[in-house]
Length: 140
Image (cartoon, rainbow, N blue to C red; front, side, top):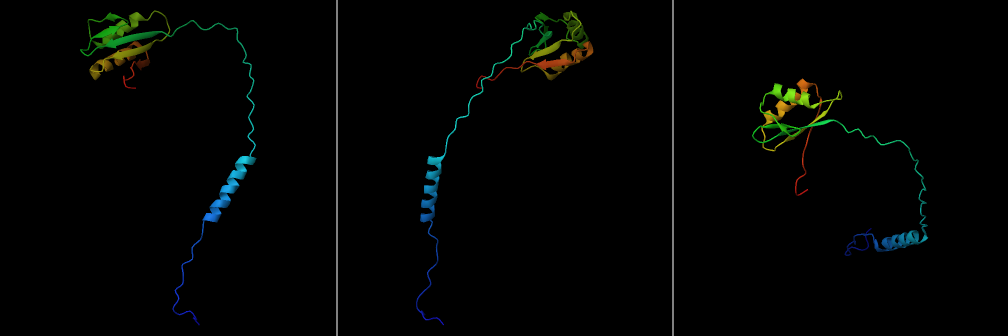
């Protein structure tokens, strides 16, 4: 039995303003009542060592390759561009029995084959530690 024929039902809605007010009061209460404890910093006395620093530097061979394909090993130019002559020059530079690190300084415009020739010559000479020298970009 509907006694209110002409009256429309209003949509129910939840009022969130009192809920927000209560939550704001709770947050303020928690912030005020919280205890901020400082953690104590550790006082550490590091041990000392009486050992001497190692004076031995790793043996390196710098191989330069310019854009035209010319090779320079530790500042000395090579006349022959063959892999065998590069390998012989690498072996002539090494005086000790320790395996050196070959650092390849290749021009950005050098051919890929020139760099591969240095890597192949290093392999023939028995040097497996090869790295490439780079430089950072000016904008970085």
